[in-house]
Amino acid sequence: MRAIAVSAFRAEPRLVELPKPDPEAGEVRVKVEYAALNPLDWQTADGAPGEAVPPVFPLVLGTDFAGRVDMIGSGDNTFRVGDPVFGRVTAPPLGRCGAYGEYLCVPQDSAIALVPRDMPLQAAAALPSAGTTAAQILSSTAVRSGLSLLVIGATGGVGSFLTQLAAARGIGVVAAVRGEEGRRMGALGATATVDTTSGPEALAAAVRALYPDGVDALVDLVSTDAASFAAHAALLRDGGVAVTTRSVAAPPGVAWSDFRLAPSAVLLDELASAVARGELDVPIDMELPLEKAPQALAQNRAGGARGKTVFAI
Image (tube, rainbow, N blue to C red; front, side, top):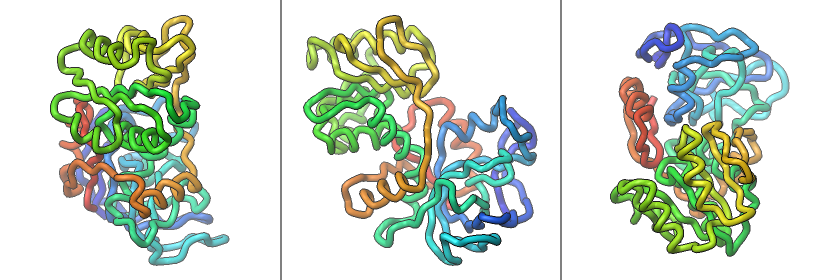
């Protein structure tokens, strides 16, 4: 099968030919039709310290997938051959299977779910990591209707889903964007958008003009240094909460959390149902062939994502 893999950590991702994986007991093999790009994919290529099980090389990259069940391992069956499914590759060892390959194997009791009849597989592939992250972040903030949420890095996959989910709850979303993305984020439900290209001072002034006492919650999907995170956290009201996805500590006196994803099939079902009902839009920025994945990973590493990139396998 064709796959995008690395021969060692920090090696360049390349298109390779590998044997099809065989499903073990309790697993299904999926013939992948679409895979979605996530920052975790190039982070995995850079190295995964602390793995309990040694990785497998060539290490097949990719986490989010959609396709059809191709083979079922021994044991109890949740799925049938031919079922359209989507989910996340999480089972060890790292690299044995990845979404950037024509076939993968995943445990039936992991984060894998049926694709609703009215949902394209392309959209399903783009949903697992970004959609689940957005939903769980929103729950962690405990922000309710009538309150405010500032989202830094709002235009990417997570930010786009988060904006929609928060707006649907009646939360006032202030989306920090760059350039011409304001109109798109407004269509996704943002109450206000702030162009950050002029620098942090312009962002602070705009947020203070909207919420003089500060916003109720902050979700920072971008900042990798304490100073930047602290500058954004300064826009919170007294008692506000900050969430980071980049493992950056907040300044003293700020209630904050370092988000960690906990994927589940139940949440995938809920998100997919919302998409199928037309209540949640999947923001796909571009579709590329699998062989373009190495270049797309490099571009994603540089930042500035707008929605999701998916690969046709």
